[in-house]
Image (spheres, one colour):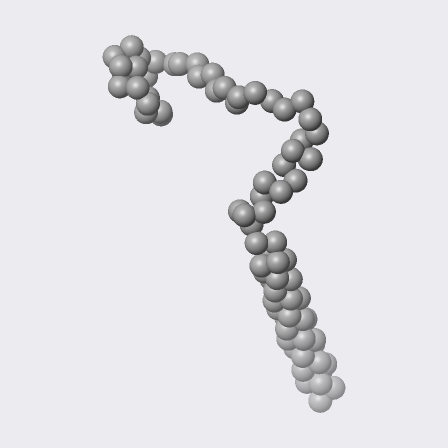
Length: 85
């Protein structure tokens, strides 16, 4: 469902009718897209904070995995000790 930006379009299209939308993306640059956008993201993203968050998440996942492995190992050791007696 879309809401037309121009109110008169509502008079031309009825509810339930199929429509085709064309989206104009504007002119394209003839240059290198990497060079054209190399610093366009700079104000949108804090790369250092992103990197810190990624490393923190990986560390937490690693610690959680180690804790689960230690619990499983303790359980096996406990079962072995009980079997020995």
